Each structure stands twice: as structure tokens, then as C-alpha cells.
Image 1 (cartoon, rainbow, N blue to C red):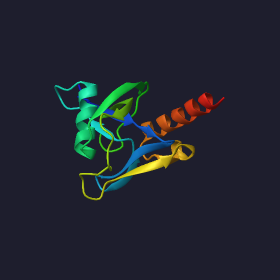
Image 2 (image 1 turned 30 degrees about the vertical axis):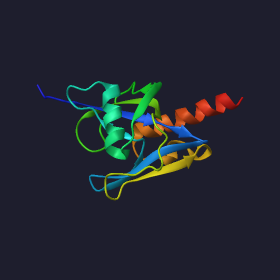
Image 3 (image 1 turned 60 degrees about the vertical axis):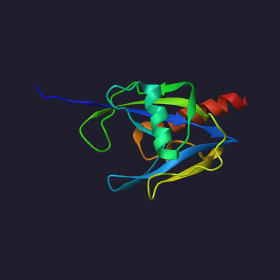
Length: 143
């Protein structure tokens, strides 16, 4: 029997002053635009993973404000032969950041206007779906 593995990813959605924070990163030779976050390590829960990832990426302490979405369909990895399960939470910083500083060379944080958020903004398939879902949520809130 062939052994397959799961790749569990946890991401944060942070809105401030009508803008969404996204990452532009170099991943295995490809430039990608994605939500901030990353892979869960053995022994972590999803919230601990997200807090660690934001600390690693931005040096920022966050609190999780609520669950937004968990992948509910089969998604093969963009990079290997695993199945990706992604979990998205709304987050907010515990302390107002003076500025967002990326700790990885070449990576950068981008603030994107709410109106520009949609599937086309993101590189990874699940992020594209979440971008569409955020657009729909904001349209609904506007009515």
C-alpha cells in the first residue's frame, strides 16, 4: 500500500484600515503571493502553529479572533505529492506593530486594498478560493 501524507497549513487573515496583509515569498524557486502562515509541526495545535509562524515571519505576537475556513475538498500540494489541508483564522496583533519586518531575505509583506482582494491576487489554489470568499463576505457586509 502506497503511503500518502497530509500537509497541514495554517494562515492568518489580518485586515486593518480597509487593507489585507499578504506575503510575497520565494518558495522552492517560485515567487508566490499568499496569506501569512505556514506548516504545522508535529506536536502543535493550529493556533500555536499560527502564532509561531507570525512570530517567525514578522516578529509579531497575535491573537486568533476566529475561524474563517478549512479546506473541504481534495487539494494536491503545489510543491510535492502531499494532500494540503489549509486552515484560515482571522487574527489581530497583540501590540500595535510599529512596522512589519520580514525576517526572511527577499520576502516582503504587502498591504492590499480590500477592493483588490480576490482569486487573481493569490498564487496558491486554496488561497485563491479564500480570496473569493473574502470578496463575497465583504460584498454581503456592504449591503
